[in-house]
Image (cartoon, rainbow, N blue to C red; front, side, top):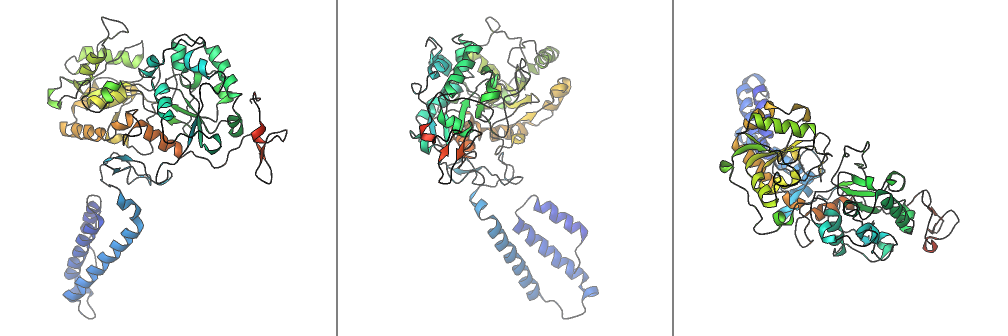
Length: 489
């Protein structure tokens, strides 16, 4: 029996577009038809009747069905839509929508459900924590720290305090969360960088569990592009700890990044609550047909090359690109409502690099439903293990800002843009810092990523153990008798 080459090509096309069983039926029918065309040449024995053909076809279909059922039974519980933003086919890690239509993390590498336990240090438990949260005089207003793009330093702490995954028993904790609002404290001039550094060292020296693991199971939030650099000695003391940060590169005034892709977690920035809350948002998206611009950039130039190029491009193409020369203060400042009203008025939101690679505008764009165009080469995005960003964003080289960018964006049909926006709606819940009662939130994503890092065993260069499992230090003092302050590396 021979098979026509054109028919094989047709089968390949089919297999990329339709379920495999349907393709097999088509393939088998074509194969049998091909057999009919050639059997006079190849037929030297008993003729193949219609009954033989039907029986062979049923056998092939049944065999393939059973094999596929066996191989893919676990993933049959997931939604395998081909064009999903979640990585189904190219990776074993699959993010499905089995959680009432909301994203849910895959089992492989994560577990079937969240089961981690996190101990949150109390501000009165460790000398030095209060200054890192409220300044040395205790004058920092935490409600101010809660707002703005760096509000994650407060929000994550508050959410963990009320989390069902919080434990008050250190001995059963998988992780230890160290609360500190150093970005806010530094901005309020309540502590200098030198004072922040000294206070962190004081805090760490009082934590036996930090010494036990070398800090591997301790979590710190660094919510800005400056990353951990506010703690100038972080490379010495926190080089094994877990950082929750939106910044995967560095600020322009630092020559190194504090982010490590294998131990740290990229988190979403803090979008204003009035845009992320359930119900009516501060500003609702506009229909695509009513948007006045192809693209916009609504940020300060700050003397940065890429941003200045966008301002110049807007002067050349004022009908296509809105990019006013904004300042930090009025009258050239857009306040909250006005800002979001402008942001929603374009099909594409341009996201150039600022003083560091991340920018809050990336996350804000999802809530006004403009397609983010990332022009920040070193950017790192949250939850990359499960989200396929090619389905919801565009990344454009920062070295090619010019008319070609606008020509490219103009060439994208509206129906394609609408598809990207629709897929973006599926993930924007992951940018909201909502309570655990919500089925989808940034905290759910962070907790899942933390669960991948859970260790059964904890050790460091200063941790030793005996035949009966007793943990001791260099002086053979048992762990439960370790007393602060303890020497740090």
